[in-house]
Amino acid sequence: MKPKAARKLLERYRVTDGAAFRLADHDPADGGGGIVDHDELDALLADGVARLSELQGRLYAADTWSLLVVLQAMDAAGKDGTIKHVMTGVNPQGVVVTPFKQPGPEDLAHGFLWRVHAHAPAAGRIAVFNRSHYEDVLVARVHPELLDHAHLPAGLHGGKKFWRHRLEDISAFETYLVHQGTAVIKIFLHVSREEQKRRFLSRIDTPHKNWKFSAADIKERDYWDEYQTAYEQAIAATATAHAPWYVVPADNKLFAHLVVAEAMIDALSGMELEEPSPPEAECKLLAEAKARLEAE
Ligand code: ATP
Ligand code: MG
Image (cartoon, rainbow, N blue to C red; front, side, top):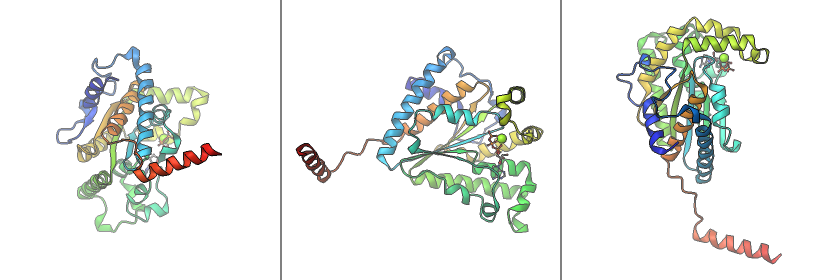
């Protein structure tokens, strides 16, 4: 996309201050309000993927900055497809995708950020979290009985203050990463309840998609409203200018992919990614190596 149009598009979905944030103000079927010509989505995404690939090459070469992309969504909102289509052009050596499932016994014996921190990106790399530390203020908030297994002292368990502390800790953790040179962007793929139903039915009716459907998905759908409230509270409490949320309309998959690609491009473009030029001593070494090779 042209830089000006991309900026306008991202501004539409970026949340940097939660004070007035209402999820209900965001339409999962929003198509960009005329900023994007939908007949060109394929071409715009292909162009975005190519630019992302180029920027990732520079990120890798610079070996200082890094990027963390947190992907959160309800089931069937398209997390896997987004990763597949947006990351198709990037060098697999430079990207690590980590899916976060239910925590195991060792995870539960530690604080909730313990297992997450180890997967933050190394210098020069992109890390994509397919679900993340936010599950600890989403699924855990919708099903607080999960906390029974978290080895928490009784006095610390549950209550409004408990969730406020978790949200503050998440924010502080993300700020810490930013201070280390990691850009942090958080994506909420915002799908509608109707579209989720359509996608579940398609997964059930299409044999080669059956594997994508699990009985747990239909159970969690019963908690739709509770999840929407938990998302609203989490986004409101953790949206900052340095670690923004993007509430990406996800009823149209291709459009969602374009917005995510542009958000990543924007984050990478904010870094000084000059390819490192070798110091004088190294130039001399290179010249000597070249002379030796040519003399062989
Ligand atoms: P897909 O269904 O496309 O494979 P998914 O991310 O839904 O992707 P699942 O294995 O279906 O993967 O689900 C992972 C489950 O793990 C989700 O239900 C999620 O809520 C749960 N989970 C992740 N992190 C935590 C956590 N910290 N505490 C409790 N449950 C968690
Ligand atoms: Mg699932």
